Length: 211
Image 1 (cartoon, rainbow, N blue to C red):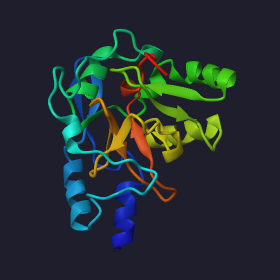
Image 2: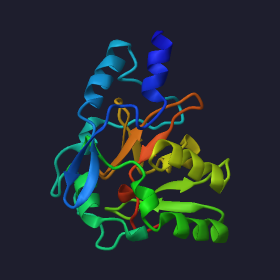
Image 3: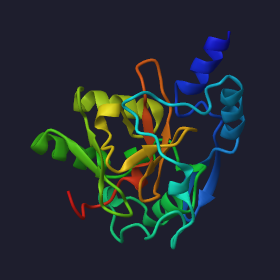
Image 4: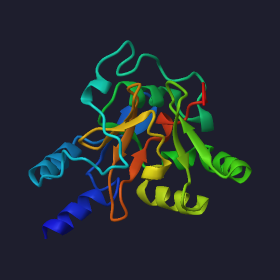
């Protein structure tokens, strides 16, 4: 029974009892109830953990207050895929417990533009919406269709360990995925395959400042 409960909590981005709230003009997900689930994970000895050698852990101090929330700068003026800048700035810089609503990423131009990028380059690059530093490159070890299928099934772009650029990404012990610059990205919610990073598209919709 315990194993089933653990699997049910971790198997999907949407099982955490999300309720909806509003940030700016965008609909976002409030994960206040997820705190209860994190407490259950802590009781089971799974809330604060290391996610394996492939996952680079970070310190809470990375998310300390800075000149613009948890970051030094606001999100870029023009985000890729026509992502909502106002929602992006709230989620990236003034938030630890909210997300764009499930499926938001499919309402942008991501599916069209990402397929074109993949067909041209064999991969899609995702950049920090604040700094423009590269954070994820996907798909790796799977097809474009597999990447999109998994992301659709969970509601958010979902990355695996090999698709994370660990130079600028960290995972906190509670599963929060962040950039080293203090951008809130999403959460690591492992499944039977391994680590799965469910990431807000608005957090990785930047344009590159440097490779």
